[in-house]
Image (cartoon, rainbow, N blue to C red; front, side, top):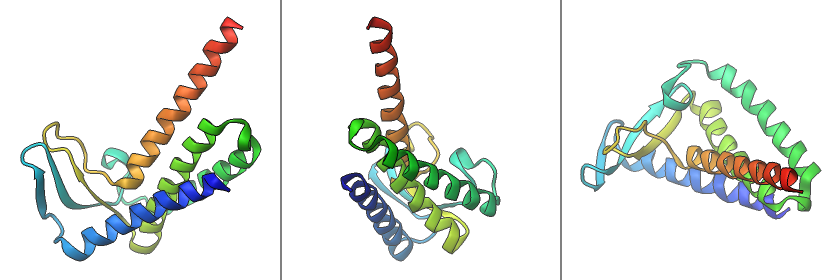
Length: 151
């Protein structure tokens, strides 16, 4: 149950930050946090990461439903036996649902975290949670593979 709470926190933080951007920023407005390095920039994305597959709303909705179901199934299966895997899946779950809600209700995802220094695509809290979750999952998988080879 703890990991579902983590997913809920990620989802809530994602939705709160997106709501603040929509309410208080004009589309395209950019607020420097660290001038030339990091800005809050109000942006919308009708595609996936890096803007690929634009205007494929229903494709992403269907894929997300399948991914969320798979994550919940796997979280129930691994449970307390693999806390890092469960934590990583909770991050992915919260992020996936956050972007899913945007696509479902608005047809696009609200993005605002803009690293202008490296010209990285603008992203959001949900995207961050998904990336960190996938990274932790890969780390745990590699750690287990190395342990099996040694053992």
